[in-house]
Length: 292
Length: 299
Image (cartoon, rainbow over all chains, first blue to last red; front, top):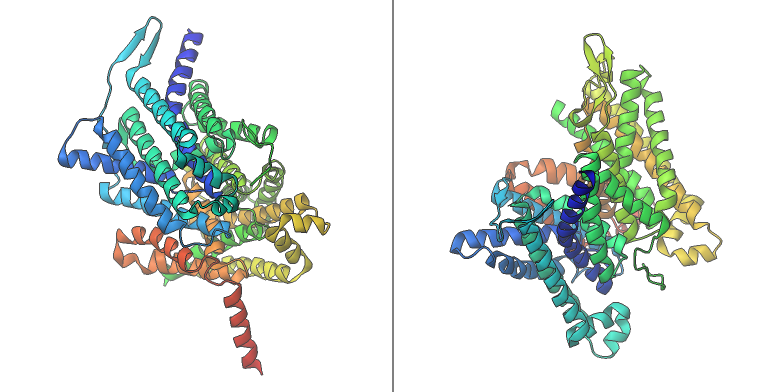
């Protein structure tokens, strides 16, 4: 029975881990392009899911539409964060943008609490049902989340590696000065990165809402922490790293929960991070070029 | 009156916490572990006075030493990475400490009461001050004496060779290294000093609130710890004090009449300040102007 339960929790964890991977990709993309961290990212993502919830409640619509609305709202929030927290602050001062995004994080969280009176809101379920596979059961909603997250990743990778926009983005992330010399407008690429990652985050926020079944301001801090851990384990700036690390963290979280209970599970996830920091500080896909 | 004295106590402990982050920030490292060190100092000092009956000063020093030692141990693996990786590593550390105390029970019977930390319920009955007849005024004076001593030490350090070494590492690691500065030693020392100062802040905090629990020492507190020196400016310890007065005095207490809207304004004002003054309220240029003004008066 132990093996069955263990495999079950690994599978559940892997499926839910896809959302962590999406949040991790958001952190890592902004880092890759600007070498800055956007602390407000997870807060804005959950905020976008809330915005979708509000809009659906207001004008009505099918549950799956909330995913698209959340992605659109996330893109808008991403642009707002870029303008308020990065555009007019000298990028040579790393502390200033860290602090401004922390301020934005507090603002976003507080707006959520303010508009919902801090009460958790039910999120519409997109897919119901359970796939019964003999000894195992696979939750339909988690499979849906996983498939959607994979789709989002494929779209993103296509955007980055097969379009002109993606080439420009990667050029900026490799060598901003040279990119500017060949006529790429840095501010445009930076803003676009924030819009794209914001859309990804909003989509992830809505997926998390549909998997958990509700949205709560209490999601924001754990999601920020898990997203950052995924980013570091995967290697800063590495998209494949973030995907694998996201699945790994989701899986580890569920396995530790199975063995040690819900109050202790996060201790072991953090210790996993320290294991990586000690033995593989560059992350899973560490770059040979050392950069901060 | 007691309200203002209470506010003074809060400001004292937060200034102390901000100063602990100030030392680490001087070396260019952003540490969100300060809340974790503060939790360790708070629990150790409170357990020593409540469970073992130690005198306050000895317990505070013991708490600071344990927190400093932990900072030293955490410093070695954590400082192999730097910049944003360190931010994440220290976030993880603060969460580990918080979750440890969430699962930590150690109670002994004293009279009819059971005292000591009890997991999620926290650590009640830290009654050193009331048992020994200290008034709120005494406590406020005591806290600010400790803060003033630490501030004086850091102010002196800023002017000594040690301060120059810290700032050299913070400005440009490679340049500092080529001047023969041992980067690891400098960073770990700064981390240790910061940990000890945060531990002291924790001990003070535990005794004036009489009740601590894991939810006091979250990432949010760690964020405040680095927010004070960054908002205040890193060129002087007075920047940290200015930021504590700005945040705790003006934003938290002064805007209380705004009700719920105050919290909204809080984040927005931080964003605004960073846009207007990216190097902090009292940046190097402002400090130089102030210094000129004061020296002119003397003539």
